[in-house]
Length: 263
Ligand SMILES: N[C@@H](CCC(=O)N[C@@H](CS)C(=O)NCC(=O)O)C(=O)O
Image (cartoon, helix red, strand yellow):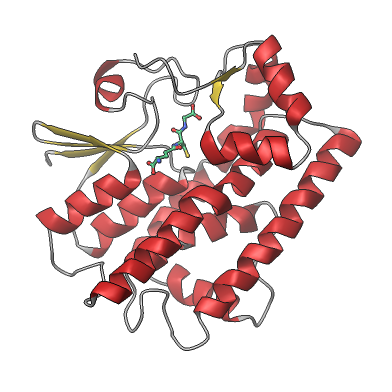
């Protein structure tokens, strides 16, 4: 029995960040998937906790918290040992900058691959064109990440921590679409090391186990059941990478939603 519940979807890299941190700290928690996750229609305790209707949301006793970064901060402050943040202010700032880049720019690319391949927002030549754009952008992002590892084993410095748990879920997500880091690169050897950790391995196994469920979600979009959230960097990705027609089509068919209004 535990009084910690994480509302999540196993494929959500944001939820994975929180699961890895809890597991590194040896904290027992329960996971729940919100009913109707990703449709914009989820309700109950989860919707109360997460006004943007996004996973993850953490419930700890009477406390409810949304947003993976805020949840990570809460976990770190509530269960400080072992620390996920490095020691010095500059190393902490570096870890947070890496997290920010992954949460915004990198995630937009893997999210777009999901919209195309799971949710079938584009097919044929259109899908090929958008997938190629995503591949080019991921290669650039991987080059940027490789440079961060020139002098260190871990993004966090000497020890695995905040920066690493903020990168691994996203890179594993890209790899599941066939965009792995180049063999032999700093990033590829780092990924092997990270994935060997029990906290990451368990989280990744759960993600892989739920991949099969994604086979039918394309039909749910065309039947109008899903209303996916297009916001911030994700919306920007579609606009700048040649998917403006997907946004227009989604508005017309009422299968995309924006963050506002809060429920
Ligand atoms: N900034 C949030 C982002 C969370 C987020 O975007 N979660 C996605 C899943 S990966 C979600 O629940 N989206 C709702 C939807 O697509 O309807 C965080 O860091 O937790």
